Amino acid sequence: MRIGIDFASAAAQRAGIGRFTRELVKALLELDRGNEYVLVKTSDGEALDLSEFGHSNLSFRSLPVSHRWSIILWHRLGLPLPLDWLTGRLDLYHATDFVLPPLRCRKTVLTIHDLSFLVRPECAHPKVARFLSKAVPKSIRRATLIHANSENTKRDLMERLGVAPEKIEVVYEGVTPGYTRVTDEARLEQVRRKYRLDKPFVLSVGTLEPRKNHARLIEAHSALRERRLPQELLIAGGSGWLYEETLPLPGKLGLEDSVRFLGFVPDDDLPALMSLADVFAYPSLYEGFGLPVVEAMACGTPVVASNTSCLPEIAGDAALLVDPTDVSSLADALYRAATDDDLRRVMAKRGLARAARFTWRAAAGRMLILYRRLGEDSQVCVSA
Image (cartoon, rainbow, N blue to C red; front, top):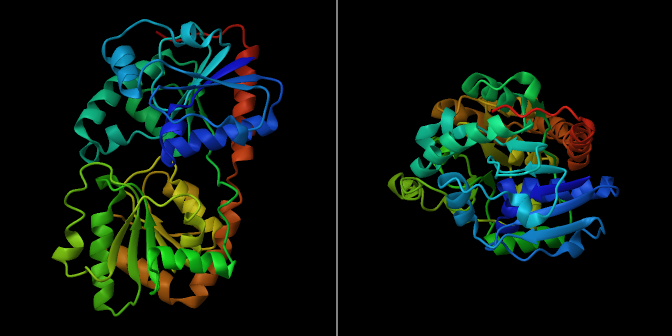
């Protein structure tokens, strides 16, 4: 088969959907030398260095428009120009980022990472929420198969958008091999110097946006300072949207000396940063998968996470799960995870075992089965 994959996010961003797409493609190519893969990006994405993949059954096509203009032309203006007129014939196309372009190819997989724009619309950028609320249901109706990244996302698709369960397949994400506990003291010292880590700390990783719930995490940290907990709070993540009230909060609470925003932290530094953290905090209001949770577990760091959406499904009994809207409960869980040595040892052991369940090789293997199933099905029917 000649399989097209939307690689635009992977060429434009290092985290989130970009990481998902990049790691999935790498794992697919390690498993599959028979099919031909065509990676499709927009003109504003970075030039792709295919040498890191190192396989002859791979090529890429760069569209003559930016990501913004592809959205405008295909999804706002409804330009009926099929993508595969530009890429050449495709037997199957995998849209990895919520929306499906016009295609002649009738066998398609559409990845839906979450339905936060419906479940938590108050946390989404209004323009993005309006666009996704219209474009995603249309794409779902046209897609042959929907890939959900958790049972919770599948349930949301069924309940919120009425998608038939037999049209949805769950394939979990994986932990990148580099995410493991770092014990090299020279590497740890390098990261300590780079981020000025001269105190113990609680770490949170996620784009600065309301859904990540950083404001309540900072309030919980304020309560912990009153209990003489020595840890700083470090928040790693680039600026997203609707974050303007979060940035000044440490100053308003008198926490300028104990809360720091690190900005975007590259993948090369995150395993060491997670290994150095006393606790990893992920009090998100809603997630589709919550990859940073299992990445922190893979680094042997105790995790405190929300008891909402997919996070109980992903974390299991390896994390302390709390109501993300209850600042007092969040503070109590962080205190326990930071001070109870016996609990910390149990959580670290369970976390390592839990994280081992999620691999990109397993994800790619399952996805390859789905690709082959669609390729062999001559009776594919796409609902109108």
